[in-house]
Length: 610
Image 1 (tube, rainbow, N blue to C red):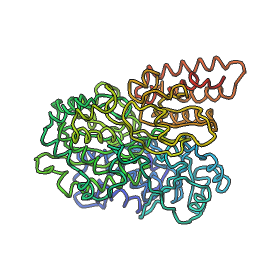
Image 2 (image 1 turned 90 degrees about the vertical axis):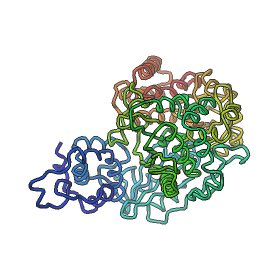
Image 3 (image 1 turned 135 degrees about the vertical axis):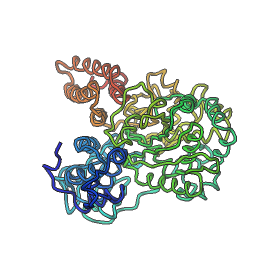
């Protein structure tokens, strides 16, 4: 593909942005000045192509500096990385993060997803449209434009807005509990408001995973050590790799990312795989509506995540770790990067971790939107964020084709609790099959939204009560349990124990720990359409069942919700069920397999469309 045909050469700003990641080019072959040797010697080849995994960091750098990725800028990046332009174009157009058309320096992203919709996001968007025109570059004003956005992971502070100004001094910020006049002021060139500090809405005595968040300085290594930091690491050294894995197995820790796979078994499988090197990937790309627990952990206790990753690496033989943070979390990313740098400076990362002779280091990768774990691998490798077929499983052939351990942030935080308190004490909390505590993201129509930590098996009714319950005079309509890929439950099911086996018994799931409470003011039809639009938008398009199914699901759902009492409605409902079954049976990854779960449960549990 000849991308130069529709764009000029890279600007000096774009070239500087690329070079800031890759270093200065040393020859004409790399995009630099001609040297005499260039007439006789070709440079690049395998060594240059091995840098392909830096494509996304390079694209982020261009976007941050210029505000969008031009064809000229993309061509220069391709030349530096030896990536075919057609492939790079496929990557840059895959991710929503990257704009390929010119846009103003100031971009204001207004979340209109489920939780923000419950808090007035539609009214906020209507006010902005009235003042500045429609969402997108066509509504630009004084060097600024506003955009409707999927979930920003700020559901506890809805409605939420992410601000971003490109240039040499690229900056990002957020507006929480956003009011129209405040956002209008930003778009008119006013000062950015200070983001509200996020507190933990529970008594400290009830907390384990969250006990340090808000209590220590998240940017100070010494503050973390004074609060007991790296005690679990010392215990891990005493136990040795096999002892650590045995503790996780005895504690019966199940993964907190949604699949609930036994963590000890996964770690053991990676440790026993003979191929080298081993990689560790921490998934902090929680992009499902209603989910924000990993953000709170990264912002409030980043050193704990670095410690847990180091323990995981030493136990499974990993030499390199990648922490993949979604791009909408600038504060979390900054604090994690700072924690990694300070841990390295104090000798807890690098060529000789704490004098053990082991080599392990962490690279923080800024996501651009990759929903599934193997899609994260492709994204880190500089490819489109499409999931891979299994087998082979990540423990056999994951990142860069090598054995890879993948855990999410909450799972790793539990490792510290197990090592500090012992497997028996950990297993004594929760239920027999679902041990420990669990973080739940409470949002929607509750008085005190936020992240709550409760023992596994706590009832949904008790959890809603902890969040202050509904506002006065309101009645419960439904609860979306488990996020957009979860299920709707009603008042009759509020006494369900929040455990893996308890929710399974009622045909629901804990999923990512999202709990969105909807009172009688919620427009359920619009919420269902927003969920359908989320899955259509998030589908990578690789497999037909998901690509076509999510598109048809939204179209048919619109007809069903608009055709109450008309002919053909029952046939459309039956067709929705058939599409749901096809997506469950034939989609490559979990996104397609669960894309119809919430919508189907709304028909069954709530009688939607009757």
